[in-house]
Image 1 (tube, rainbow, N blue to C red):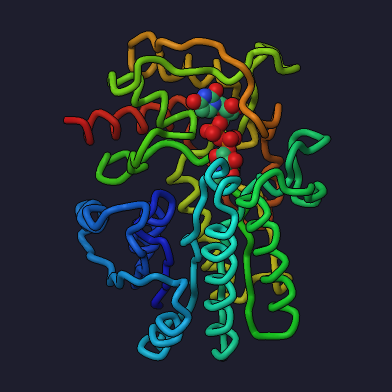
Image 2: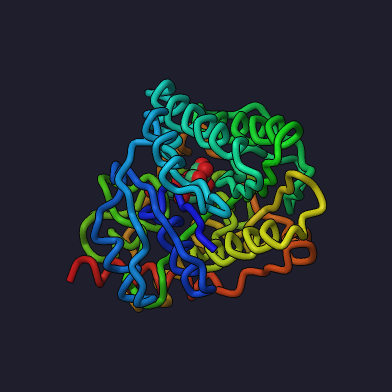
Length: 337
Ligand code: WQD
């Protein structure tokens, strides 16, 4: 079975390629290398012993997308990661996000609708819920007006897929990630640090290794037990395994609807201070940090109700927060060695 993974050299994409190969799938990756490097291919091979096929393509070029699918007529499924994903950047550069995250999705779906079968896994985000009223968040929690163009592209992307599946042979699973963190236990692949990290965990590990002076904690005046914001931090390997299970579900025609949606989290919320303490525990060192003002657009709390993924998908996150932090720290030490 040949699976196309777009953005397959990225953080979540590369971990998913490893898990696909572990399950015996043949993988072909498309990546434009805008937010990663070719060295990730070596990391994947060092883990699985198999080199996935790879094509460097900019999927914003419709002709290149059409040409790719003309040359690869044996693709049984597509896992679509390729997208821009920095919330802050999307506010300042919305058209980059609408072109890269929407046009590309349309071009790929236009190719899939030509095929007799089309199994499609979409990388979505808990961002679509905004600040949900009720915790933990279920899949039928209302989708709120997006707080950023990035979040809007995930909402629009889901709607495009739903509308397309209604009138074509496309079967899809929408995976709404909470907060992916950590790295493969082998430290052969992980989150590649490009620029100043916007996300909490890479900033913590870069502070731990001495690259950053101290962590700024964005607010300790939230209505939470310790005043800092709460998120659901899920190990990237747990997340990757969910993609393989979802693809197998579609390939085996086990899906109950043309489009199914699943929250992918641990089901447990952790505050910023709890993440810091987890890092200090696994690294054995104090983390320098200061409390500063809240970050514009941040929500107080988001953690997943994982019942549907557990029962319908048959998937459950296995790694703890400390294990995820330990893997992130091991990766940071490896790439700085
Ligand atoms: C987590 C918590 C911050 C950095 C974003 C996207 C989401 C997904 C994951 C793509 C918040 C606090 C952070 C720092 C801090 N990305 N923080 N100091 O904002 O929950 O989600 O990334 O799919 O779509 O919205 O993740 O890691 O940026 O922040 O105090 O230097 O850590 O305020 O409470 P977030 P994050």
